[in-house]
Length: 129
Image (cartoon, rainbow, N blue to C red; front, top):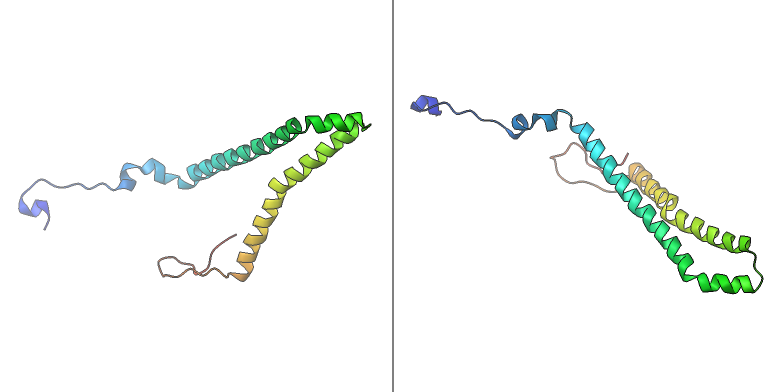
């Protein structure tokens, strides 16, 4: 029985979607923006970590650089050593993990060995692509 049938004032119900319609009207836009900001921050933190690692490497190796200079190494060959170290570190933290991520995603898409139990969702395997 409703309140009107009992003689009381009418009851008006509002859902969360009615009260916050501006958030639900364009869910993809703000979700994409939020994900972009989060990913940019992750990449910035990672790049600062790589830069800090390389700077600390040079600061710790100043005596080794001096010894190499005294033994007759040219500054160009010493610079080449540190450029190689930076290239290896950059590859290890950049395209290397990206390659492994793509490999895992394509493997999951091809073989679909992760099964999802239940009937509340429309798919039975893990969607990757």
